[in-house]
Structure formats: C-alpha cells, structure tokens
Length: 242
Image 1 (tube, rainbow, N blue to C red):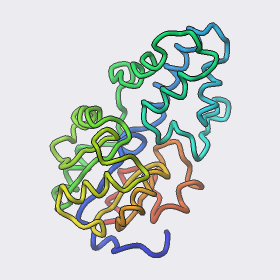
Image 2 (tube, helix red, strand yellow):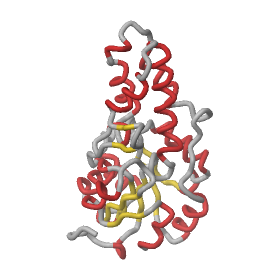
Image 3 (cartoon, one colour):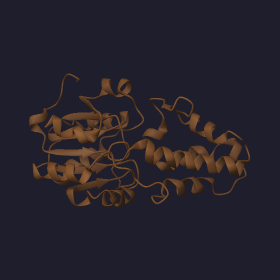
Image 4 (cartoon, one colour):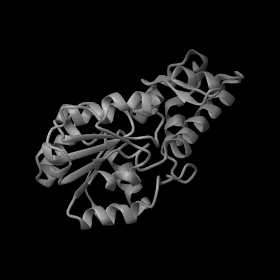
C-alpha cells in the first residue's frame, strides 16, 4: 500500500470503475478481438506472421503471453490502436484497414464481454450500502453503456463516460472530475478501480482518495503495485476494502 492516501477507506462515498480489464476480463474479451483483427490483416496482406508482428509492435508477445507495461493495447482507445496498425507498411494499398480493425473491436457478438465475476450481485450490494457507482472507459461512451446493460449493472450505475464523452482521456483527470461533479462528491471521497497505469494515474491526477488495481487485465502486480494503494485479484474483492 502506498503512503500518503488522501482521505481513506472510511471517507469513501463513491467508486469509479474502469471497464475493460476491470469489469470485463481482458484476455477473454479484448485480447480475442485483437487477435481476430490481426489475423484478418495477416490474411489480407498475404504475409505469414504479420498478425503476431502487429501484436508484438503493440507490446504483446504471443510466445510469452505477456504485455509490456506501456502496451497501448492495455489502455489506448480503439481508434488509436486501429490507426497505428493501419499505418503498418505491410498493409499499404489495402483499403479501409482501420475500418476493418474497428469492426472487430466493436463486434460484441463475436467477442462478447466476459464479466470478471457476478457483477449484478456486487453492484447491488455496493449501491445498497450507500455508495454511488460510475464507469470511466477508454472505449466509447455508447459501448460503455451497452456493455453495462449486457452485464446487468446499468441500473446501478449513475455515471458512464468514454474517451469520446468530452472529458479527455486517461491518465488525465477529466473523467474522474466529471464523475465527481455529476454525482455530487468530492474527489477525496472517491475510490478508483482499474487495471492499468492510466487508471491509477487518473485517480492521482484527480486527487481521488484511493487508487485500487485489479489483476484481471494485462498488467502484472509488479507493474501495478508501485502505483496503487491496494492490489486485488479482481473487482469482486472491492468489498474487503470497505
């Protein structure tokens, strides 16, 4: 646990959750989509091994099944990832590359969100205890809302923001600040729960009480622990902090 926590657990009145890697298991949902998009690009290019190369350039090694700490696959927007891949020299001359990639990223039927636990039960208990709940994602706001509905937690969530909501992107403080303003709490009364350095830095930059990391994303404890007040196996352990 880091020293210098602003406020503390007893002061928590609201929790702001990341979506992907926190409420949704990253590997079974998003890594599957990344692999699917990379496989299509490899087939289109006719270059064997291009799929693995695209992932490797983005900080994911298929052989070791590990991400680099700064891998954009863990925290960047879908638009940014698609743009990076579309600029690959091996894909020059292929039309609508970015659009093809984005279709994979937005296909919730092919890559359905896999919850990290019984979220409706958890969110019901948290709300019943008086906590105000929100979601801040680097996905789109529309996708954030549809995913919350698919997970069965939308009725418990008072605020949802995406990278396109006009509050800026992580690790900037904008989404956390907007949450505080929308639900009427001070940042020193907010716990942020996420799976990447961007989530934890957002919490710090906004002056939130606690930055809590979970291990259901692509980053390991060694990367997250120095940045977090607490590291949990999954979001289902949040109640142990309250």
